Image (cartoon, rainbow, N blue to C red; front, side, top):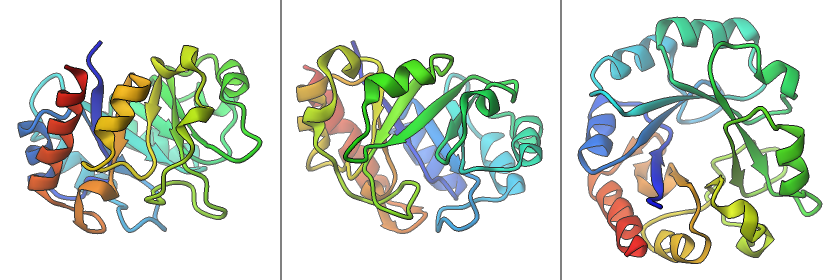
Length: 207
């Protein structure tokens, strides 16, 4: 099965179009103001309007007020929601869009138990854990903690770039990989050559 690629933290139209040109399946918008990759609803809507069909748009939230999520759904028309905070299942299901649950791999996190808890999610995104940071740490975690039976159903994140994503795909065969900092030249500013190199490594690893 082909591994999907999501380029997250898009803040500029040219970066979104470069991601699509080089084969990204999805792009992510961060609606979390403390993040250096934060975009406004107006910015994201303008970028989304320029995308071709069959590219999934993802809205990332961290314990957001429901009104913000509703505005993003209405004005940006994102396809998928991604929750990175302390959101519980009853919060996640109320927003008129399919969703995935991001999981920081704390030392005591059991991804199988989390999957059961968030059974209504389209999938889990597994990310590295750093206290006080809800994602985008640029760090990897121990991939051996991902059970083999779960790997094909997860989105792998955390410290991925062109130097290690091939190994991750060959080893785990995840449903998708998610990258932000690993394809940037500055926070929130993507590098088209790094995007291409990242996706090329994913495709090579599938062969």
